[in-house]
Length: 215
Length: 215
Image 1 (cartoon, rainbow over the protein chains, first blue to last red):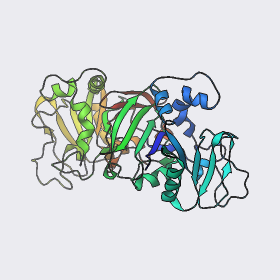
Image 2 (cartoon, rainbow over the protein chains, first blue to last red):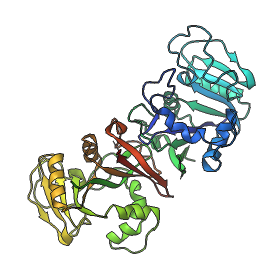
Image 3 (cartoon, rainbow over the protein chains, first blue to last red):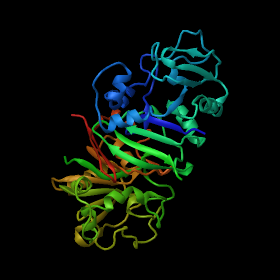
Image 4 (spheres, each protein chain N blue to C red):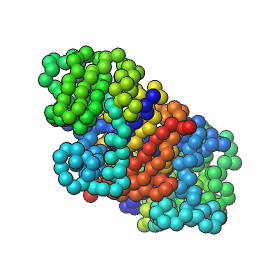
């Protein structure tokens, strides 16, 4: 069985993984963009979006690690796009243009069936309507011996966390306050599920924490 | 008017300032002691409790800053002791023995009146029954031109924070998960109250954040 890994999931100091009032113009919610400044500044992310330069060192090492040995992704439906409810048509193909930065099979959790979409660069979006366990099984099979990365968002992470299915979670706490939004860990007994903090290190832009299962 | 300052207030990675089920044997709640390991390891805290040695550097600098220019303290009643409801008698005199580490007037918020207690080393505990604003006024007067330190616990900090009365708050996030307990910032729109994160730095034992009012 491959490992299910979360990387570069950004949190505010007050524990929110996204700001309030997410929509097409503000996919990360009001103020949510500030959570990701550390990542967007790294060489790894800049290269992914076709730019040069960027920070190297701790932030970039964490960013790069998130792409090592990943054979498939799982995303929540709201991370795939702003459309809610039944798909009105097939025009929405993700936030990322014709060539998304995944380059693997990506399993999107949704209550509404849809045909798979083959994108440029090796990304294929599959829509999974039978729940988180089914999505993990399909992703594990598609990963071909490599690991599965769980991209988010908050609600999806909370589901997998509560089910005890995440092996390792890298959180990046940005030195910003959001005040409201989607809280990642609130109300979940994370140590009771067997996780502990195994690493923490801060840079100017973020504090990085790794949560992993004991033993 | 003196400044109202919070220092060395420890939080878990999941946002709790104390663990669940606080009582006389576990005044910080189950697991809550781990939040304070960084502080107890510092030279400043060790000296306060009559020991030698201890860490120097960032952790210790933050610990020491918390005692600079402080002329009075405010504590919530549960931080003063485990007694709930009316005082059964006058035997409980705080967690700290005959010579508490405050050495100033300390204003304890409670719903139940009690005579002030003069302790060794310059600490006098005063019991304030008319609310957080009254306690702050009395502390400000007692501070004699110096600042007032708000010690905690969580419920007391939340009251002062919501009222916009805290000028500066130093939080120390320990790399531990508690899973449940008293959440410090949950449900409070801290940036909406005018605070932003003005400093953050991590050591092996904690990540330090300063929240301060704009302007």
